Image 1: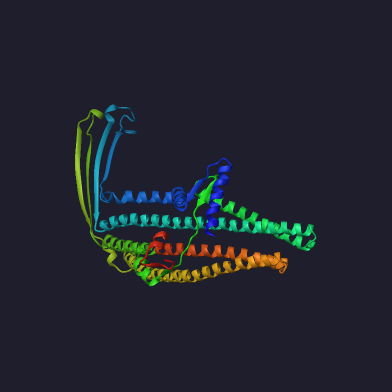
Image 2: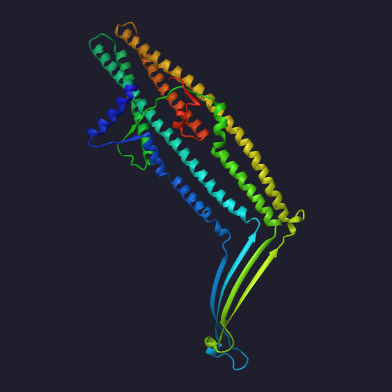
Length: 445
């Protein structure tokens, strides 16, 4: 079977070369890399992460003073009194001002911590999305590899049916068999061709969709370089959970939520009950008295220092007091959510480990079925050639062999996907999961 898989890849390359095109050979790593580069979602998340990092790197902006500068012209003249309205340059004046203002409160350090946490949260979200996309890309790649191998088996079935049809035609023409056997062989051959054609169509459609994710045209000649080769691995869930549970993105995210709510609680409490200090200064300059723009210049410099002590938050039932209580409640709820998330995550890891063990038993049974089905077909074909077995029996054994091969491919793909799902649940690269000897044991070694 391994030989057939390798031969298929070679035949695809030779076929493309015969058409005058140089095929693009894509390994799993190449395909995953292209999908990550082409992902619009990752690009958007990267922009959000960069924006959050920009704010986190400039925490001084939280205490940076407000700066304002103004300049203006003014004109004043009687309207109904005296000589009434009349233009006079002496009535024109000007003014300028520059002001600074500072505001300090005890909750300011927690506002800075919330900005830093926002960046770490955004970074975690980006890394998790990237890891999940890698795993999904690997699943799609292996699914295409499986469909390609399915085509190999269907081509073999079609060739067997076609050879049998030709033998039945010769036997019918020579009078060695009846028309019914010949018609049955023709029907089997055409059914095999139909199944092969449908499988090719499905593979072409799936490959085209996959290529679009890579940023390639569906008409590009592409050869997927790889095959599914699984080994039996034994996973100790109780050993995995203590080491990897806390590293899961959902748990890390929930812990960050708790941290943010703790900062918010402290910030809300201090803003509502701690004194705040405001400092401002302003310089004003402009013309004074009559004489218009040529009037003497005068300026003033003013400053103020204000200390505010809030009192309403100490009164039960006020909005600020309710805000403090609400912040405490949200923090308690987040702590409960974390406990529930940890429990569900541990159960998921145990369930995936158990499913992986059961899935390997299914793979072993499927491999044994293929061996039995192939040997059964060999013996049945020999019996048919000797006239000891009817054609319907031969067809049944051929169908059974085809079904056993197809089922093995499906079960091997399911086993591979379970490994990928477990890697996602542990938030580690699936290749690292396969190589982690302390946690996994390769039974075939």
